[in-house]
Image 1 (cartoon, rainbow, N blue to C red):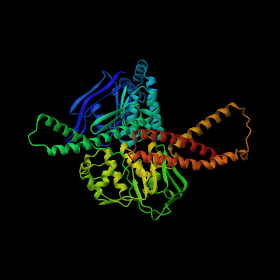
Image 2: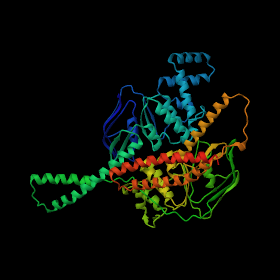
Image 3: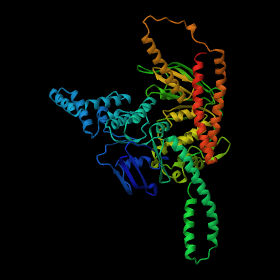
Image 4: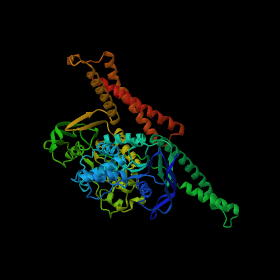
Length: 623
């Protein structure tokens, strides 16, 4: 394969904090690499270094000559006076600049200039390029081309930046959290686009389904070094678990040997020979190895939640619209105790507005939410991140409480609690302004959870959180003894923590679906297929149709009825087995052979649960 990029012995530090030391890797033609690391360990910094936006202490970054490189930054920046279209074509690419010139000229009255630009468009064969560019813009729902960049939201600006990168047709793309601020349809379109293209890719993302479906290699930054895995995210999880298990065995062995060597060191006389000197040097190497940190990724945290009564909330004839855009129309719903609801839908369909009405931040046009007296909300919002940058991390948390009570009655000090959320003692005494964006999000999450809420409302909680933190949060939410509403575009996260969905289709149409996101997608694909088949069949029939009586609708046979009744029990049993296996895998006590065996069994169980659920949905529609 042709090498596009080579990183050789790259080292980067911020003061006393070393992010990575002498790391070496490459990106070849056709490779699609996912970059994984905890927040604050250098993912974005590494992309900035490669893109030439940040310096480094030692090493080399070498590109193939004349390589076209695109970079989607986590927080893109354009001149505010540019229009959306001008920003989309804001590039040094000659063809892109010609198209931008064409768009500007066609809005003028200069016919001579128009003809001259059209001739150049013909000569450069730019028409197909422009068509493809506008296709990308429409897929990302960028339609108001004359809107000024300065008036866009952060999410709209990120989509414009993504369009700009894709339009320039680079050979290598660097992507920093590309799925943030994209709705589910856009994410799935982007998955397909990147899979079909021959673009090489180096990407930071927390979206594990996206990693699984797009990347063919994973690079992990851990303890200032990199580890490479030749496979997708699922393969990485399996091999990383093996690496951690092996490393922990080696550390344990080193600790045992260290105790013996330490005893020998204490018994040595002051004058030591050459042989003893060699053994002493080996002792210090062994000591370093024994001090290596064990994996801290599998944190389980069960914060005590306040008692919650049987009445949670009722939505009573709630209606809301903004101008011609309807969000809710005479909406009624009774929320059940311990319910875990996921909300999905395209941007602009009203997901966050629904949450804000529930939280009394936006008033309905009519109707109201009747909330139970024992409900104690914990609200994590997209806009809620607000800290004094000159405070220390531990002081931010201590301002809320000195202690946190866990579900088993154990009491933790704030330092111990922060440790659970991967803030080391050093980090706890850092000032807030030194934290990365993801670390600030993690701190915000701590401040929400430590108040012991019994009803969590999370609006896009996965944005800017690393995968390790997401695993911690998922484990917490799975064991949370309370109610949950979560708005998220992270499909993996939704599958793990919710038991049913509200699907916002727009124009006040809300579908209550009894399953997780993957099950919803399977159901939707099946319905779309049935609709296409029906349309194809009806178009091939004569125009005179015989309307069947509704009473002739197919009913369940006795055998199907018995199957339907047994499916709920079967699905519950499979879910219980899956939960047990996940608990065993997270325990960290399994031997290597059992680890792989149980991981494979979980994959089989997921497929079986999906199959049984789809059959249950199919039969339920005939009830």
